[in-house]
Image (cartoon, rainbow over all chains, first blue to last red; front, side, top):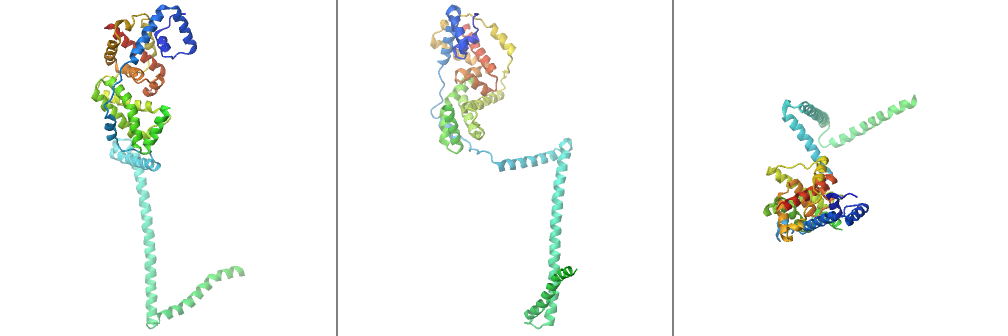
Amino acid sequence: MNCPNLIEIYAYLEQELSAEDRLRIEEHLEACPGCRKLLAGRRFYLESLAGLPSLEPPPDFTDRVMSELPPLKSPARLWLGLAGGLYLLFSLLVAGLALGTRTALFPVCLKIFKGLFNLAADFSSLIIRLIQQAYGIVKGLRIFLGVVAGLLTDIFPAGGLGLAALVLAVPLSLVLFWLLLRPAKILSRS
Amino acid sequence: MAAEEDRTLVRRSLRGERQAFEMLVRKYQQPLFNYFGRMVQERELSLDLTQEVFLRAYAALHTYQEKFQFSTWLFRIASNLLIDHWRKKKLPLVSIDPNPDEEEQQLRQLPDQEPAVSESYERKELLKKIEQAIAQLPESLRELFVLRHMNDFSYEEIATIKHLPLGTVKNRVFQAREWLRARLEEK
């Protein structure tokens, strides 16, 4: 066989060859003094490299490192990722607006901002209307109760107000009871 | 097994056991210092870089994936730190992208027969000459050479650390050895 090249010689010395290739080279070495010399030279060279002294850090090096350690970060949590994502989105929107009309991102960011603003405005007006409606009902009820209370005070003498309320409440309850039951009767008749 | 032991120490470190990380520091400070010492050739700078690797590793420990060996993950941080250092110093970075044609040609050009290094130097003298020659190796070759011969990483582990194809790593280490050997023969 032909003489092995240097890559094969190194691979042989580092035991990186397959058993078949290893055997092939060993057979060649037996018959080739030149390759044996080459192998011996490279073996000595590799052994010399392995004999290079190790560099040693000073004895207090571990303490030096440990005293400088930063705070340990825990694995990322889902909510942190979510918050980070929202913050990133917000930052991108703000950045898009801040960059002005020079970037293509501006109209998109502006559109999203407008949408968010309109949504918030509609929601706010709905809440305000509900409050106004509730306030109107409460106000109307208060006026009505005030009028009724005034009438009752005029009709009945002081101290008889409780009795008057009871007298009025009984027939009113009966009337309401009748009104509630009446449709059912009408339906049953038909 | 050493790799499994490292993973256990990382898990304990993540639970807040500083003693576990201290064990990792004790275990890897010498290999890292050896690596930087050979790469930058300055003791104090090597110590600073070694420390920085541990600080970066600790800060990013939660990102460590157990499918990798801790040693290769740590040396990847070291290698990136070294690249940053060279960039800051504005040293020219030699590309180590694989170029099979060029490599094959270089291999063919190497002489098959040459005088053995052992004939030229006594062992002690030889080690001194090798140290001097390592300092002159181009950075890209030197790094792979140091990882292989100073840190005893396998070719596969070096390929993982450097994100290079296995064949490229083998060829580059071979080139570094022969470059170094040629320098020894010159003197």
